[in-house]
Image (cartoon, rainbow, N blue to C red; front, side, top):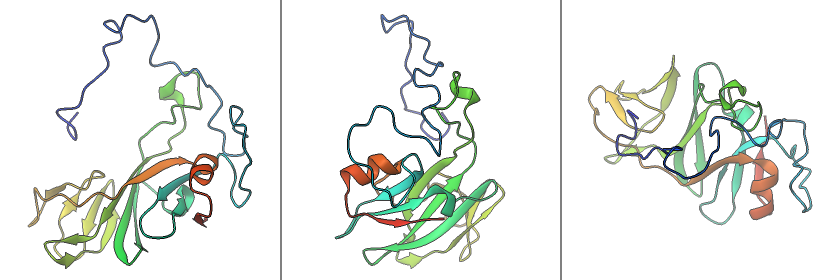
Length: 184
């Protein structure tokens, strides 16, 4: 709630449905070497169907980065260029897969992703991960996974978010055929 204080939370008791929202109805679906059992289309075999990717669709050609190529340790910052724009992918550990275990909290750590422009007030920043946070080299400002400057001379600033999707390769490649896949 700290990152999204105005976010809404489902009150399952007021929903009118008797459902355990902490329980996964698709247990075992998120298996990296698995097959998407509800999918009926053709699979793009350039990547594993259930491989997690960060899909970005700006410019003329969609691109997908395999999560394994943009994650490491507690957090990781990956500089990229897409359609002539300097961007950064932030990845941070701490998010359980909602589609792996019977109980969502029991899913393996797949992490969280954010994609941002690296330009703030006309200055191009470069980032690294230090522990669970992100720090830019130019000002030593500390940034969150949501692109908010927490400490330092840019505190309170917000990186411009880039539309992206953290999803499975089969899903992204089905809706964005011809995507360039950056693998591990």
